[in-house]
Image (tube, rainbow, N blue to C red; front, side):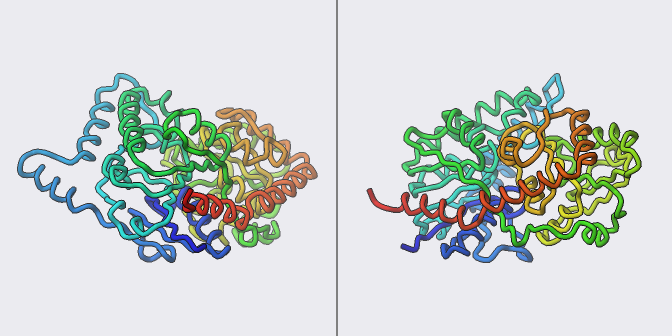
Length: 424
């Protein structure tokens, strides 16, 4: 039975968007095509079978009324509440993202949602207006979790509640709005975590309606694209000295404090004087951090900016002697499996889904988060024991080939879609 599946996502770009596109590609390759509806889409790089959802006309009228009578839409009011909470805070508030439960879009009115047999939700912050969307939505649905945002209020990781106390009250308020809206919908739900850690957190949150089923399906990765390039050749192509021990890092934006780039930089400061005769270098890709962070890097730095090409990313990972994912919070760790697929040993923090990405330490080395000293020790260990580094590299690639095979992911999702669309 060919089902009509529509994926709903704010964007096909950045980490969650890339994971969603890989899921769609896996489904398509297995003979299960699907469509993608987004609120943000670059026509120059739009995935095949995708569409941009227009903004809701009513919100345009609401904005006009605000100019005339001083009354705004819910999104504007929520943004003012966030600004007010931060402006009146007496202590620092550090967080990555804080999203409202409102939106100026109405994807629930789009034909692709109305025609779908099953809707697969992804990262939909600022795209789905919870109250308006779920008031009329009754389709069987899968909700793929890419972070903790769907079952929190405004935060996308619960750790931000500790570092941004000024927004806790709003986080609770927005969560109630979201929860009540989802509970009012007659939709049948299956929630899919990208790690068992995320699935367990979603289940224990009590956010989703009674009777919701929870599953875990790991991200797919095409290991014919993410495959090892001979290390010396990869380094030469990137202009990296052949004798350098190259430590790798990657994320969308290097200035995102959650990703822990500063912890790695501090680790390299500890490591470089004691590295012996072999030079240590840093290879990274992602948007640049601020000038102060850049100035603090004391080793040769090969920085390649934000990359979209999977082939170029594979070359980058292959040129690294080890890859470090020092995130302070992470639902899974997509860059970790990309590096592993390229036969590069990985060092990661003992947080969230990273532990699973590294198979509990069997396919990589784990350290306590925010500990530059331990990062330095583990990097030095891989430098000093190349045979162990090779064994970890082999174990990592073997794990990704088996556990993250695209056909395995596609079969798991198609089974859920079929179950949801089959009348009881």
